[in-house]
Length: 450
Ligand code: AMP
Image (tube, rainbow, N blue to C red):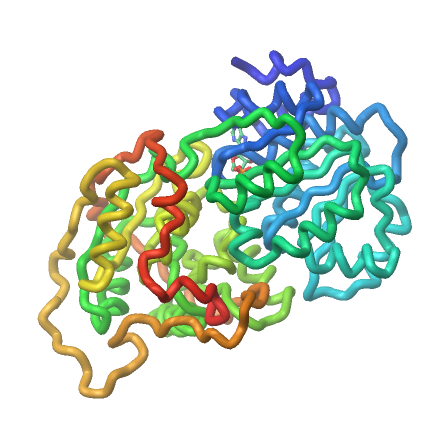
C-alpha cells in the first residue's frame, strides 16, 4: 500500500513527500480511510507508530476546501511537548495548504496565545487546563469545530485530566467527528469511548507490546551500584543518543548532574523549571548537543527524537504500559534500539509482568569489568535505596514541569561492545487489565514526586 491509495489532495501529498514518508505505517493504513470517510475512530496505538500523521493527514484533507481562520479542528494532548510535536507535524505535512495551527498550553504567557487566536487559526493543539482557561474567558470560539481529537487518552486519564476533558467536550458542537488515540484500553478509556464517540471504527496496532525493533536486556544490580553501573555501561557501549528514565524528578536531576560531572553532554528533563529551559533541554537533545537526556516518565511524554539508540531504565517503571511508553522512545519508525533496564531484587514481580507482555524471557546481563561486590555506603544515601514512594497529599498529580539542561563538557562514547539482540517483542498484545495493573503501591497516588 502506498500513500497514493488514500487519494490525498496534491497539496497534502506534497507534505507527505517533503517528510520522506514512503509507505504508510500500520496505524495509518487502518485509520486514514475511515477518518477520511468522516467516521469516528478509536485508534489503539502507542507513540512511535505514526499515529500523529494518521489523524493529521485526514484532518488537513477535510479542512482544505472550507473557510479559513475559524477553529475547525481541535487536538487535545496531555503534555506541551506532545502538543508542540503535533503542531510541528501539522505545519510540515500541511506546508502547502496554508492551513494554520497553534498550540495552547499553560506555563507560558496567555497574551501571545490570545493574539494568535484573534488573528484566526484553523487547528488548535491544546493541553486541557489552559484550553479551559481560554474557554472560560471567551478567548476561544469552538462553535465551528468539525473534528475533535483526544490524543494519548490513557495518559490524559492517568494525569487526572478526565474532568477537564468532560468540561471541554460540553463546549464543542455535538455534530462533529471525534477521534481518540490511546496506547491502551483500560475500562476508563472504554467508558470514555462510549460517551464521546459515535459508532466508532476501532483500529489497533499491537496495543501494549513495545516495538519489535527494540531489543531488551536486564542488568541485575543493587540500588547503591546503579550509578556506577550506568557510568561503566556508557563507557563500554557504542551509543548515539540515550534517554535515561528515573522514577523521581530528584533522581533525574541528580543523575544528570553526575553525568555532566563525568564529562558527558547530558541534560535532565524534570520538575519546576521554566518552559524555556525545558524546551532548551529538548531542543539540545534533538539536535545532538546533549547526547544524554535523563527524564521522568511524565517529562518525557512525546519526546520525538528519531535517533535515540538506547533507552536506559535506571529505575523500573511503574507499570508494563509505562515500560512500553518508555521503550517506544527508541526503535522509532523502524530504526533499531536497545532498552536496558536496571533491576534490583524488589523489581522481580515487575520483570515477570514485562516478560509476559513481551512473550519471552529477557536476557539478564552482567557487565564485564564492573565491580558488583562493592558494599553499600554506611549512610543511607539517596541512591542506596529504592526511590521513595510519591507523597499522597495531592489527589491529582500536578502537571509536570521539567527543568532544562546545564552545560557540560563534551565526551563521546567510543568503545564498542555492542550486545547481541535480546527478546524481540513482535506484535503481541496483552489484556488491558493485566497491563494496567500497578506493580505496587508506589504508583497508586500518581506522581506528585515526578
Ligand atoms: P508518531 O507515532 O506520530 O509520534 O510518529 C513517530 C515518528 O514516525 C515521527 O517521527 C514521524 O515523523 C514518523 N513517521 C510517521 N509516519 C511515517 C511514515 N509513514 N514513514 C516514515 N516515518 C513516519
